[in-house]
Amino acid sequence: MLAEDMRRLAEEISNAYEERVKGVAEMRAAEAERKSTTQADLKKTADQLRADLDRFKSDLDASEADRKDTTQADLKKTADQLRADLDRFMSNLDAAEAERKDTTQAELNEKTEELRGSLASFRAELSASVAGLMGEFKKDSSEAAEVWNEILSTMRSAGREAALTCPAKVEAGVEVKTVSEAIEEEEAAEEIIEREPLRSKILGILEDNTDGLRMVEIADTLGIENWRSLIPLMRELKDNGEVRKEDSSYYAA
Image (cartoon, rainbow, N blue to C red; front, top):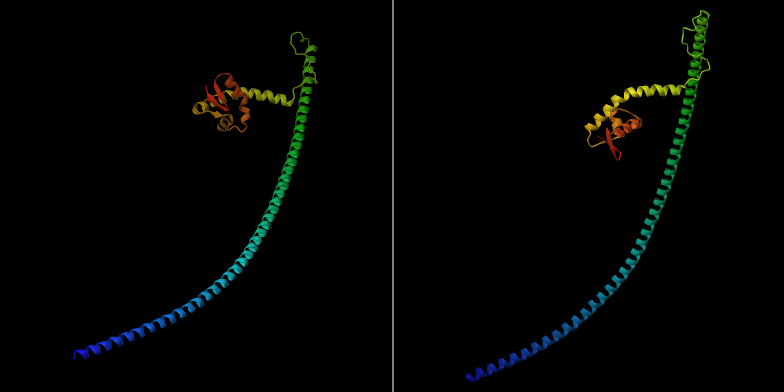
């Protein structure tokens, strides 16, 4: 019984060993076949990848070359357009500047001619007015001289010449002042009268403005259009010590 069991166990072990050896052999064969298949697949895949990579690099190089050509062309086109726009702008600017200068010069010439015409007309009218006034003045002087001489003649004939202190005989040709001199004397007399209130106003304005005022500002405050007309009076006030001047401003002393 024991021997039978031992024999059966030995057979089972032997069968198991053979099956194991057979399984190992099959596994080795399968592994070898797998390795062979894997190597072939890997080689095929690698070859495919190399081909794809070469084609990609070729396409990339072609695309880059085309991109460079396109970019250069676009840049050149843009640069040419910018140059054309700049040239057109400069041309328009030069034309506008030339037109502005022509217009300004024409306007200046027109204003100059207008001023010359106005000045000539004013001079002619002034000369005519002065001539008329002088003629009337000489006529009046001549008539007055004749009347006075008639009075003297009448008084001499009446024997009363010694009782009179008569002025020298008035001659029609006596020298008379020009219209401009007469006007200046009249203005001087008026100025003496008008300076006192103006002097007081100026001193009052400067006392109210302790920070000082320029002459043009004083004239504006007084409502005087020509501020230069204040120069003599301001100089007199400064010389009298009533005002003081620092730079271009005047202050109450």
